[in-house]
Length: 163
Image 1 (cartoon, rainbow, N blue to C red):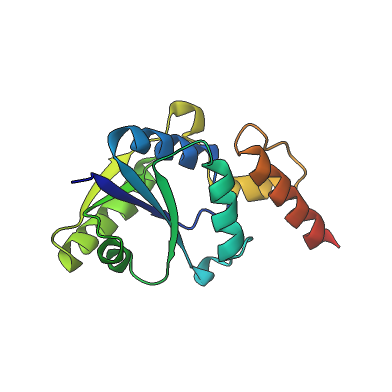
Image 2: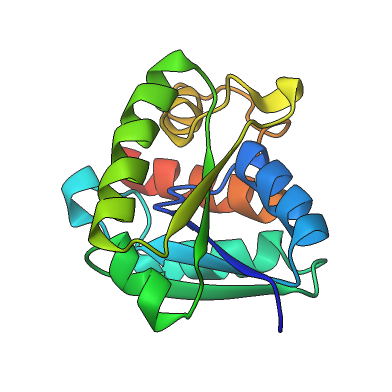
């Protein structure tokens, strides 16, 4: 039986912090489903299809990753992809409070759903998708924080926004 896990998120955009967690998850699990969430409430910079394509490019070097999408409750994605473990990244105490509540709710909704919290390497502990977008909109250098294909896509979107 394969050890499988779901790593869900909006990934708008995928950062090197996300990739750090994905790569480490790939060493722990046989198959890592990366669940790109359709979450219009967050007013994403990229469409779902664009986020999935950027994730594919960023994870091209990994052979035990499958990029999938989901809409609605994460526990429904857990059932759909037949996983019982979810990986969630935590950067700070503020992340933990929210993630802890979500893990308890998900377990209540599906008692077979376990959550594993992973911290990114300290190099990426301050990186967030929101900060990446803010820095890029101010013409800051984001190359150390995202995959090159992601950086190019962000800069293209930023230029389009300014037109």
